[in-house]
Image 1 (cartoon, rainbow, N blue to C red):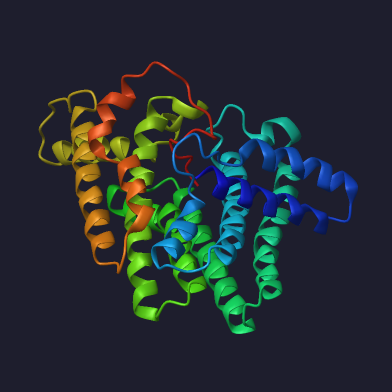
Image 2: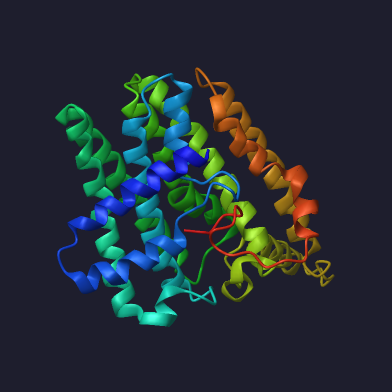
Length: 315
Protein backbone atom coordinates (compact mmCIF):
# COMPACT_ATOMS: atom_id res chain seq x y z
CA UNK A 1 0.00 0.00 0.00
CA UNK A 2 2.76 2.45 0.93
CA UNK A 3 4.42 2.11 -2.49
CA UNK A 4 1.13 2.83 -4.27
CA UNK A 5 0.51 5.91 -2.16
CA UNK A 6 4.01 7.27 -2.68
CA UNK A 7 3.76 6.80 -6.45
CA UNK A 8 0.51 8.74 -6.61
CA UNK A 9 1.94 11.52 -4.45
CA UNK A 10 4.95 11.85 -6.76
CA UNK A 11 2.69 12.18 -9.81
CA UNK A 12 0.64 14.87 -8.10
CA UNK A 13 3.77 16.76 -7.10
CA UNK A 14 5.14 16.60 -10.64
CA UNK A 15 1.88 17.99 -11.98
CA UNK A 16 2.39 21.23 -10.08
CA UNK A 17 5.13 22.16 -12.55
CA UNK A 18 2.31 22.99 -14.97
CA UNK A 19 1.51 26.02 -12.81
CA UNK A 20 3.46 28.91 -14.33
CA UNK A 21 2.63 31.55 -11.71
CA UNK A 22 4.84 30.96 -8.70
CA UNK A 23 2.46 32.51 -6.18
CA UNK A 24 -0.36 30.26 -7.33
CA UNK A 25 1.85 27.18 -7.17
CA UNK A 26 3.11 28.11 -3.72
CA UNK A 27 -0.47 28.53 -2.51
CA UNK A 28 -1.64 25.27 -4.05
CA UNK A 29 1.21 23.06 -2.88
CA UNK A 30 0.47 23.14 0.87
CA UNK A 31 -3.24 22.60 0.23
CA UNK A 32 -2.55 19.43 -1.73
CA UNK A 33 0.13 18.29 0.69
CA UNK A 34 -2.06 18.69 3.78
CA UNK A 35 -5.06 16.95 2.24
CA UNK A 36 -3.46 14.05 0.40
CA UNK A 37 -4.78 10.80 1.83
CA UNK A 38 -2.19 8.70 3.62
CA UNK A 39 -1.86 4.94 3.30
CA UNK A 40 -1.35 4.45 7.03
CA UNK A 41 -4.84 5.77 7.83
CA UNK A 42 -7.03 3.20 6.19
CA UNK A 43 -7.47 2.66 2.46
CA UNK A 44 -7.40 6.01 0.57
CA UNK A 45 -10.21 6.58 -1.89
CA UNK A 46 -7.75 7.08 -4.74
CA UNK A 47 -6.84 3.39 -4.40
CA UNK A 48 -10.10 2.48 -6.16
CA UNK A 49 -8.70 2.67 -9.73
CA UNK A 50 -5.43 1.06 -8.65
CA UNK A 51 -7.08 -1.89 -6.93
CA UNK A 52 -9.56 -2.30 -9.81
CA UNK A 53 -6.75 -2.39 -12.36
CA UNK A 54 -4.78 -4.75 -10.13
CA UNK A 55 -7.76 -7.08 -9.79
CA UNK A 56 -7.90 -7.30 -13.58
CA UNK A 57 -4.21 -8.21 -13.70
CA UNK A 58 -3.02 -5.20 -15.72
CA UNK A 59 -0.05 -2.82 -15.54
CA UNK A 60 -0.58 -0.36 -12.67
CA UNK A 61 1.41 2.60 -14.00
CA UNK A 62 -1.51 4.09 -15.97
CA UNK A 63 -3.78 3.51 -12.96
CA UNK A 64 -1.45 5.62 -10.81
CA UNK A 65 -2.07 8.62 -13.08
CA UNK A 66 -5.81 8.01 -12.97
CA UNK A 67 -5.61 7.82 -9.18
CA UNK A 68 -3.65 11.08 -9.03
CA UNK A 69 -6.29 12.83 -11.13
CA UNK A 70 -9.05 11.39 -8.93
CA UNK A 71 -7.35 12.56 -5.74
CA UNK A 72 -6.78 16.11 -7.02
CA UNK A 73 -10.42 16.31 -8.05
CA UNK A 74 -11.54 14.97 -4.67
CA UNK A 75 -9.54 17.65 -2.85
CA UNK A 76 -11.00 20.37 -5.09
CA UNK A 77 -14.54 19.15 -4.46
CA UNK A 78 -13.88 19.02 -0.72
CA UNK A 79 -12.62 22.61 -0.62
CA UNK A 80 -15.70 23.85 -2.47
CA UNK A 81 -18.04 21.75 -0.36
CA UNK A 82 -16.62 23.14 2.87
CA UNK A 83 -17.16 26.69 1.67
CA UNK A 84 -20.72 26.04 0.47
CA UNK A 85 -21.77 24.08 3.54
CA UNK A 86 -19.89 26.08 6.21
CA UNK A 87 -19.64 22.87 8.24
CA UNK A 88 -15.89 22.38 8.79
CA UNK A 89 -13.92 24.23 11.43
CA UNK A 90 -10.51 24.23 9.70
CA UNK A 91 -11.82 24.74 6.16
CA UNK A 92 -9.52 26.38 3.62
CA UNK A 93 -11.93 29.23 2.89
CA UNK A 94 -11.78 30.35 6.52
CA UNK A 95 -8.01 30.79 6.17
CA UNK A 96 -7.68 32.40 2.72
CA UNK A 97 -11.21 33.56 1.92
CA UNK A 98 -13.85 32.10 -0.44
CA UNK A 99 -12.59 33.96 -3.53
CA UNK A 100 -9.10 32.47 -3.42
CA UNK A 101 -10.48 29.10 -2.39
CA UNK A 102 -12.61 28.99 -5.54
CA UNK A 103 -9.60 29.99 -7.66
CA UNK A 104 -7.48 27.19 -6.21
CA UNK A 105 -10.30 24.65 -6.56
CA UNK A 106 -10.89 25.51 -10.22
CA UNK A 107 -7.15 25.20 -10.83
CA UNK A 108 -7.15 21.78 -9.16
CA UNK A 109 -10.00 20.60 -11.39
CA UNK A 110 -7.92 21.60 -14.40
CA UNK A 111 -4.89 19.76 -12.99
CA UNK A 112 -7.05 16.71 -12.41
CA UNK A 113 -7.95 16.51 -16.09
CA UNK A 114 -4.43 17.40 -17.26
CA UNK A 115 -3.02 14.52 -15.22
CA UNK A 116 -4.82 12.12 -17.58
CA UNK A 117 -3.07 13.65 -20.60
CA UNK A 118 0.23 12.20 -19.35
CA UNK A 119 -1.12 8.74 -20.12
CA UNK A 120 -0.27 9.45 -23.76
CA UNK A 121 3.40 9.61 -22.74
CA UNK A 122 3.01 6.06 -21.42
CA UNK A 123 1.78 4.87 -24.81
CA UNK A 124 -1.95 5.08 -24.19
CA UNK A 125 -4.09 5.48 -27.28
CA UNK A 126 -5.77 8.90 -27.72
CA UNK A 127 -9.17 7.20 -27.65
CA UNK A 128 -8.41 5.84 -24.16
CA UNK A 129 -7.35 9.25 -22.87
CA UNK A 130 -10.51 10.82 -24.30
CA UNK A 131 -12.66 8.08 -22.76
CA UNK A 132 -11.12 8.70 -19.34
CA UNK A 133 -11.51 12.46 -19.62
CA UNK A 134 -15.16 11.94 -20.51
CA UNK A 135 -15.59 9.76 -17.40
CA UNK A 136 -14.10 12.54 -15.27
CA UNK A 137 -16.17 15.29 -16.88
CA UNK A 138 -19.47 13.39 -16.63
CA UNK A 139 -18.71 12.73 -12.97
CA UNK A 140 -18.01 16.41 -12.38
CA UNK A 141 -21.37 17.24 -13.95
CA UNK A 142 -23.21 14.71 -11.75
CA UNK A 143 -21.45 15.92 -8.61
CA UNK A 144 -22.38 19.53 -9.44
CA UNK A 145 -26.01 18.46 -9.90
CA UNK A 146 -25.99 16.68 -6.57
CA UNK A 147 -24.42 19.63 -4.78
CA UNK A 148 -26.98 22.01 -6.27
CA UNK A 149 -29.85 19.94 -4.88
CA UNK A 150 -28.03 19.42 -1.59
CA UNK A 151 -27.79 23.18 -1.06
CA UNK A 152 -31.55 23.58 -1.18
CA UNK A 153 -33.74 24.03 1.88
CA UNK A 154 -36.26 21.34 0.96
CA UNK A 155 -34.15 18.17 0.90
CA UNK A 156 -36.32 15.19 1.85
CA UNK A 157 -35.59 11.64 2.91
CA UNK A 158 -36.60 10.53 -0.58
CA UNK A 159 -34.02 12.90 -2.09
CA UNK A 160 -31.18 11.58 0.06
CA UNK A 161 -29.89 8.71 -2.04
CA UNK A 162 -30.25 10.76 -5.22
CA UNK A 163 -27.94 13.41 -3.75
CA UNK A 164 -25.56 10.93 -2.12
CA UNK A 165 -25.40 8.95 -5.35
CA UNK A 166 -24.74 12.06 -7.44
CA UNK A 167 -21.91 13.12 -5.15
CA UNK A 168 -20.00 10.41 -3.30
CA UNK A 169 -21.57 7.62 -5.33
CA UNK A 170 -20.47 9.24 -8.57
CA UNK A 171 -16.94 9.82 -7.25
CA UNK A 172 -16.50 6.19 -6.19
CA UNK A 173 -18.07 4.96 -9.41
CA UNK A 174 -15.56 7.05 -11.34
CA UNK A 175 -12.68 5.50 -9.42
CA UNK A 176 -13.74 1.95 -10.21
CA UNK A 177 -14.86 2.59 -13.78
CA UNK A 178 -11.68 4.51 -14.63
CA UNK A 179 -9.56 1.69 -13.22
CA UNK A 180 -11.39 -0.82 -15.41
CA UNK A 181 -11.20 1.46 -18.47
CA UNK A 182 -7.45 1.95 -18.15
CA UNK A 183 -7.13 -1.83 -17.78
CA UNK A 184 -8.80 -2.25 -21.18
CA UNK A 185 -11.89 -4.01 -19.81
CA UNK A 186 -15.07 -4.44 -21.83
CA UNK A 187 -18.02 -2.08 -21.35
CA UNK A 188 -19.87 -4.77 -19.41
CA UNK A 189 -17.01 -5.28 -16.97
CA UNK A 190 -16.51 -1.52 -16.62
CA UNK A 191 -20.18 -1.28 -15.71
CA UNK A 192 -19.88 -4.03 -13.08
CA UNK A 193 -17.05 -2.27 -11.30
CA UNK A 194 -18.87 1.04 -11.64
CA UNK A 195 -21.95 -0.42 -9.92
CA UNK A 196 -19.78 -1.55 -7.03
CA UNK A 197 -18.21 1.89 -6.77
CA UNK A 198 -21.59 3.62 -6.77
CA UNK A 199 -23.02 1.44 -3.99
CA UNK A 200 -19.82 1.72 -1.99
CA UNK A 201 -19.93 5.51 -2.33
CA UNK A 202 -23.48 5.79 -1.02
CA UNK A 203 -22.49 3.52 1.87
CA UNK A 204 -19.49 5.75 2.59
CA UNK A 205 -21.68 8.86 2.57
CA UNK A 206 -24.07 7.41 5.16
CA UNK A 207 -21.07 6.39 7.25
CA UNK A 208 -19.77 9.96 6.95
CA UNK A 209 -23.13 11.34 8.09
CA UNK A 210 -22.96 9.30 11.28
CA UNK A 211 -19.50 10.62 12.12
CA UNK A 212 -20.37 14.15 10.99
CA UNK A 213 -23.22 14.29 13.50
CA UNK A 214 -20.84 13.10 16.19
CA UNK A 215 -18.52 16.04 15.46
CA UNK A 216 -15.76 13.86 14.01
CA UNK A 217 -13.34 15.57 11.59
CA UNK A 218 -14.30 19.00 12.88
CA UNK A 219 -17.58 18.82 10.97
CA UNK A 220 -20.94 19.93 12.32
CA UNK A 221 -23.54 18.44 10.01
CA UNK A 222 -26.32 18.80 12.57
CA UNK A 223 -26.72 22.51 11.76
CA UNK A 224 -27.52 21.81 8.12
CA UNK A 225 -30.29 19.23 8.56
CA UNK A 226 -29.11 17.18 5.56
CA UNK A 227 -27.59 14.13 7.25
CA UNK A 228 -29.54 10.89 6.93
CA UNK A 229 -30.35 10.44 10.66
CA UNK A 230 -31.81 13.96 10.80
CA UNK A 231 -33.84 13.55 7.61
CA UNK A 232 -35.18 10.22 8.88
CA UNK A 233 -36.13 11.76 12.23
CA UNK A 234 -37.92 14.62 10.48
CA UNK A 235 -39.81 12.18 8.25
CA UNK A 236 -41.02 10.21 11.27
CA UNK A 237 -42.09 13.42 13.05
CA UNK A 238 -43.98 14.64 9.98
CA UNK A 239 -45.70 11.28 9.68
CA UNK A 240 -46.86 11.45 13.29
CA UNK A 241 -48.14 15.00 12.80
CA UNK A 242 -50.12 13.85 9.79
CA UNK A 243 -51.96 11.29 11.93
CA UNK A 244 -52.52 13.68 14.80
CA UNK A 245 -50.20 11.63 17.03
CA UNK A 246 -48.13 13.98 19.18
CA UNK A 247 -45.77 11.38 20.61
CA UNK A 248 -42.09 12.27 20.59
CA UNK A 249 -39.83 10.45 18.16
CA UNK A 250 -37.46 9.29 20.92
CA UNK A 251 -35.05 12.23 20.57
CA UNK A 252 -33.88 11.01 17.21
CA UNK A 253 -33.80 7.32 18.10
CA UNK A 254 -36.00 6.48 15.12
CA UNK A 255 -33.60 8.31 12.80
CA UNK A 256 -30.61 6.54 14.28
CA UNK A 257 -32.21 3.11 13.93
CA UNK A 258 -33.21 3.89 10.34
CA UNK A 259 -29.65 4.94 9.53
CA UNK A 260 -28.13 1.78 11.01
CA UNK A 261 -30.59 -0.31 8.98
CA UNK A 262 -29.62 1.59 5.83
CA UNK A 263 -25.94 0.99 6.55
CA UNK A 264 -26.60 -2.74 6.74
CA UNK A 265 -28.64 -2.75 3.52
CA UNK A 266 -26.13 -0.60 1.64
CA UNK A 267 -23.27 -2.78 2.81
CA UNK A 268 -25.13 -5.81 1.46
CA UNK A 269 -25.77 -4.07 -1.87
CA UNK A 270 -22.10 -3.13 -2.23
CA UNK A 271 -21.02 -6.68 -1.33
CA UNK A 272 -23.37 -8.17 -3.92
CA UNK A 273 -22.15 -5.70 -6.56
CA UNK A 274 -18.52 -6.64 -5.90
CA UNK A 275 -19.42 -10.33 -6.14
CA UNK A 276 -20.68 -9.68 -9.70
CA UNK A 277 -17.27 -8.33 -10.75
CA UNK A 278 -14.83 -10.74 -12.46
CA UNK A 279 -12.35 -10.36 -9.59
CA UNK A 280 -12.49 -8.41 -6.34
CA UNK A 281 -8.80 -8.33 -5.43
CA UNK A 282 -8.01 -5.70 -2.84
CA UNK A 283 -11.31 -3.87 -3.37
CA UNK A 284 -12.80 -5.98 -0.59
CA UNK A 285 -10.69 -3.90 1.80
CA UNK A 286 -13.12 -1.03 1.26
CA UNK A 287 -15.96 -3.23 2.45
CA UNK A 288 -13.93 -3.92 5.58
CA UNK A 289 -13.55 -0.16 6.09
CA UNK A 290 -17.30 0.45 5.98
CA UNK A 291 -18.51 -2.70 7.71
CA UNK A 292 -21.48 -1.65 9.90
CA UNK A 293 -20.17 -4.02 12.55
CA UNK A 294 -17.35 -1.54 13.23
CA UNK A 295 -19.73 1.33 13.91
CA UNK A 296 -20.22 0.84 17.66
CA UNK A 297 -16.50 0.36 18.17
CA UNK A 298 -15.55 3.48 16.18
CA UNK A 299 -18.17 5.71 17.77
CA UNK A 300 -16.96 4.67 21.21
CA UNK A 301 -13.47 6.05 20.62
CA UNK A 302 -13.11 9.51 22.23
CA UNK A 303 -11.00 11.16 19.58
CA UNK A 304 -11.26 13.91 17.02
CA UNK A 305 -10.29 12.94 13.50
CA UNK A 306 -9.22 15.09 10.62
CA UNK A 307 -9.62 14.94 6.89
CA UNK A 308 -6.59 12.74 6.31
CA UNK A 309 -7.95 10.03 8.62
CA UNK A 310 -9.66 7.00 7.16
CA UNK A 311 -13.17 8.12 8.07
CA UNK A 312 -14.55 9.73 4.92
CA UNK A 313 -14.83 13.43 4.22
CA UNK A 314 -18.09 14.27 2.52
CA UNK A 315 -17.92 15.78 -0.96
